[in-house]
Image 1 (cartoon, rainbow, N blue to C red):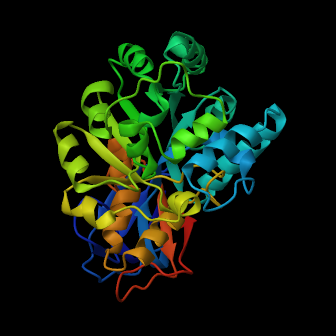
Image 2 (image 1 turned 45 degrees about the horizontal axis):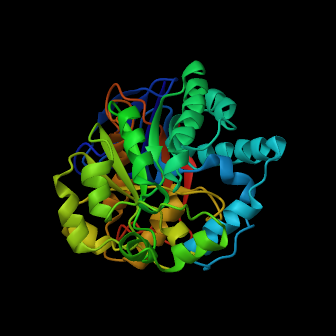
Length: 391
C-alpha cells in the first residue's frame, strides 16, 4: 500500500484538490482519496511531490507498426506527398518493424500512457501488445479506391482480425478515410462493423480532401495519379458529412482523427451522430501540414476532445504530454485541467474504458502520473514540463 500527495491533484471526479491524500494498493488500485483542504498532516510513509498528480494518459490514435519510419518522411510536404513517401519507404523487414515498435511501446509506457487505440494494417505488433503494460485496442484499418478490389480488401483485413481474436486482443474493423475508400468498400465494411464498439476514421486532415471528394481534383488526385492508384471507376462519398452520417457504422463510439481543416458547417452537420469524439494530434498536423487544428471552433461547438500521437512517421515521439504542451502554447488561454481531461478521462470514454481508466477514484486502476515543472501559479504547462510515472 502507498500514500501519495502533491501540491495539486486532478482526479476528473470533482474540483481541483490541494494536497489531498491518495491511498493506493500495491497493484495500483485506488483505495481512497482524502480531501485535506490544503492542510496535509504529516503521516508515516507518505510520498509528497511538488507538482500535479493526474490519472494515466490515454492515446486515442497511434500507428505503432510505423515506428520504424521515424525521421524518414520530409516535414511540411503536405498529406499527398506524405502518403506517397509512406508507400515508397515503408519497410517490410519484420525484425526492424518489431524492434522499433517494441521500443515505442516501452517509451509510451514511460511517458504515462495506460490505454492506446492503435491503427493496424497488419498483425506485426500484436505480440508486443499481448505482453505490454499498456492496454491496447486494435483498430484494423481498411482502404482502397478500386471498387473491384473491395472484396479482396475486406477479406485481407478479416484475416488480421482472426489473429487479433485468437490473441485475445480487442479490435474493430475501421475505414481509413473519406478520400481513400470507394463507396463499395465503405458499404462492405459497414456490414462487417454493425456491432463496433469503437470506430475511428482519419478526418479532414488536409484542405485537399474536400476538393478530391467534390471535384476529383487537387493535390490528393495528383498524388493518386502519380502512384497509379486511380481506378477506371472512381466512386467516392460526396462529403465528409455524408461519410459520417451515411457510410460509417452508427454503432458505438466514432473517433474523428485530426480535424485539422474542420469547418463549422461540417461540425454542425454531423452532430446528430451520437457518441462522437474529435481526436487531436497537433504535432503530427504541424509535421505534415504545418497547421494546428481549430481548437477554439471545436470548443465553441461543444465537441468532445481527445488526444492522439499519430505515428513516428509524422512525429518525433509518442508522448501525450508533448501534444498537450503544443496545444497549450498554441492556445495559451486553455486551462491545464481541460488539457488533462482531454488526455485522460475523455480518451477513456471514447474507448469505452472509463470504468477502469481516466479518474482517480476508489476502486479504479487509472495509473498515477506526476506533472512536474508546471506553472502552478497560473496552472499552465511550460516548455520544460515533464511527466513521471508514479504508479
